[in-house]
Image 1 (cartoon, rainbow, N blue to C red):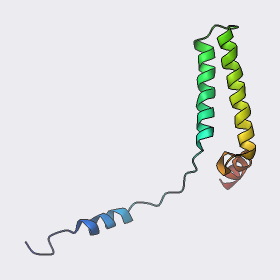
Image 2 (cartoon, rainbow, N blue to C red; image 1 turned 180 degrees about the vertical axis):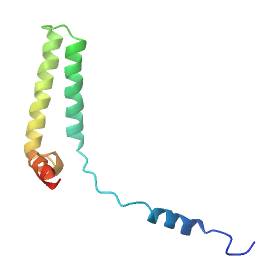
Image 3 (cartoon, one colour; image 1 turned 90 degrees about the vertical axis):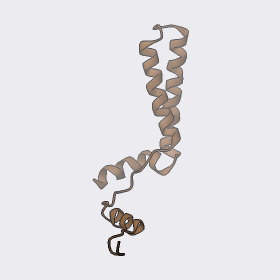
Image 4 (tube, rainbow, N blue to C red; image 1 turned 45 degrees about the vertical axis):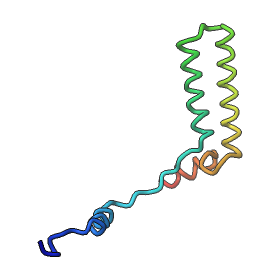
Length: 95
């Protein structure tokens, strides 16, 4: 077996990686945005499907959802860069 017939895995992987197209950066929301989003969705689902309208539990879940929305609104004003509402408009304009 001559030296030309063997392949160098490092060189081959470098070639394969160079053929991968460059991707653009994806902006990911922080953990507070994710948690409030899914907690609001879970609270609304719980109130619609699992609690009796007017019950004490229904009211507590509703107040919790309102509290989560208030937290998210405040975080949209003072939070991290991509969680702020001001970043929404710059994102839309960039397209």
